[in-house]
Image (cartoon, rainbow over all chains, first blue to last red; front, side, top):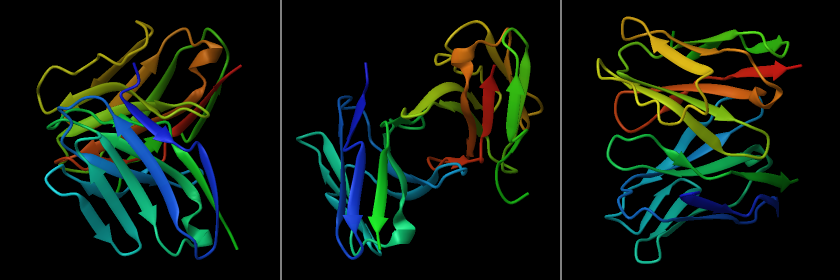
Length: 111
Length: 111
């Protein structure tokens, strides 16, 4: 049973646009929600993370929005740049348990 | 080193052979994780080591897969009698808290 559902599978955004990736989870025990960015041939790298005590977290052009009642969270990339083209994974965990990952979103930002 | 390293970066083997994949975590990190990443799929958890505790092997797909961590540092993932469906990128991550730091992965191809 997939515990973290991510959409869309792929996304094309024009330079300067807003990229939005959504995730939904089932396990209400999850209390840590990171987003990872992965470039081809590299391992995933932590981009930004949120805990359920806040509804939004912003770091530069990247924002996580969190809706605890709907069990959903999303990543917004403002002013998307070609260098943002990568695969993005949402994930969730409870305490210090292992991360459960979504299936990823391939983002292409066209020049 | 500064980050998680994995070796080899690429491994091509014949069906039925055994393979060993190595992970050198970040010095001082007590937790070490192995994941498998197949094309179009997310990161599939395999096994988790935390300090001197018994490893969480709940993600290992079959008894052909095993892993050990020596001296609380280096880890080796062993796949016996490899099958074509084992072809994937095997990622290792280490952590001291909730943030997992990933290595670049080992791409395994089983012919």
